Amino acid sequence: MSVNGIGTMGYPAAGYGVRKAQQNAAGKNVTGGAAQSSRVNTTGKDTYNGPFHLRMGGMVSRALSDGGNVTVYEADGYSAENPMVRVVTTSADGQEYEQIIDPRTVDVSKATENEMLALNAYLVREGKLDNSVYSSGVLSGAGLSNADTLSVMNLKQNFFINVKEMMEMQYNAHNLAGYAKYRKLYDVYDLFMRMKPL
Image (cartoon, rainbow, N blue to C red; front, side, top):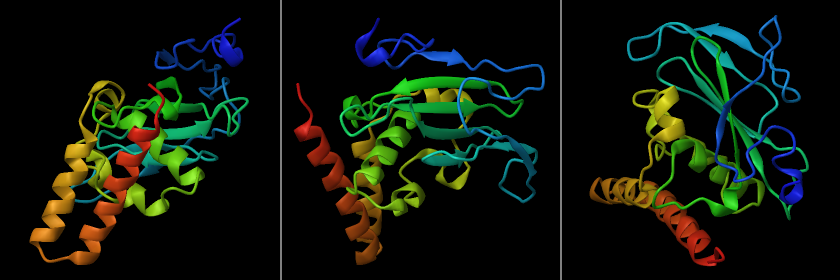
């Protein structure tokens, strides 16, 4: 048995492995809880023009530019002492991939967007950030322009740089409210990284 039971239910013990979610013949997720799928058609100049597979009942969910979706759920046994989250990435064709992430181990200077979404969900749950972090533009898919199913799971970025660039852009535009918003986000990430055990 792995630590805290992780690894005993098909989840990787290390926490960052990706696996395809099991589905029954009807295409419904049989691996976890209240996930429900619905197809929503979108139209518009700069949006994906096809079905999004939206999920309900998670901590946070976001659409991707290729029609995919990412939803963060509390993993089985989630608690303040063991805040493991289950990140389900659904491609436009309905294929699901799961990651179990301990948000306390995310390195803001080299993280995937899924890891950062898990960290943000954790920090919101802990009261360190509010829901405005999800619309902050720090994750590349905020405008549904750059994020796709593969990049959010695999592409590592330095999110300190992303936040700093957004902060400087707001400052240069003389938008002090925007600057203060990104400065707070930068400070929360910085404090989080300093408080992490080595």
